[in-house]
Picture 1: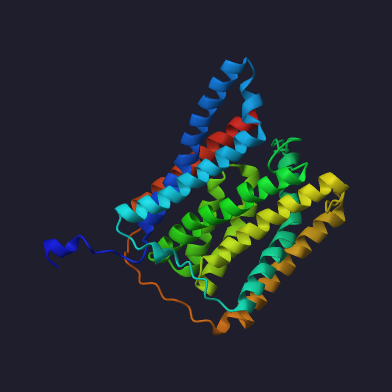
Picture 2 (picture 1 turned 90 degrees about the vertical axis):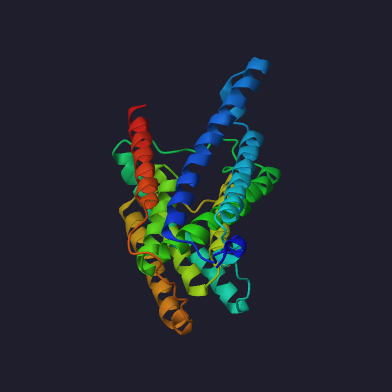
Length: 324
């Protein structure tokens, strides 16, 4: 390849180095944005002679923050692919699936939510027992809508937008990149672990890991990022929907903290795992698995750096939360 034609070379795959870099960017961007938005909130509060928390707790302030974060994630995806000369189609955004595959994906999304929620309640109870302060939704919040208008806004900002932007990075780039260095099982769990670490909250560690594993498995089995986007959206949407219904009707799926609550949580987790195994064994067994060429025999330094940074940040935040 001569010098004049080399500029047109592009690759149609990600590698583990791309995974590490994108994960590091995904960690740093929200921190930088939160600093910028905190500065803006303090400036607005100073002008209005009010408290900065009055601004930062505002629904519209958080909505703008969510939209700007999404724009940054999409920009990261576009700029990174452009500068690294990677085909945009490398994320495998394939809509050409059978209609019954779409139905199955929706079913998996619903089953995963109900199968995991009570188990996460068990984890929350354990954290509470050891003195870890759990997050509680404020009365007026995007994640705790009190009116249909706020519910609709929440669906857009906390359901649709994250389902697309986060999947672009974590199942689109990071998962596919890890597959060029590790086997599929390792790539699934590593990408899920990185997805969990991205939340930087001990309380939000187990559920993103479990859900991230399911979404990564679906992407590999369907060969399409669309499957994880759907499951991600369904999960967030159902959480917001049931919260909204509870606020306007007092209907709740919460169970009392008794011994049988723990039994139900474990049983539902087991049923979820069994259903996923059956689907994988009897529906996806005939699906051809796309083989990914291993492009390196040595793990990229960016994997170690990004995971190390994420763990250090998580440790600092956890200690600060305990001591605060």
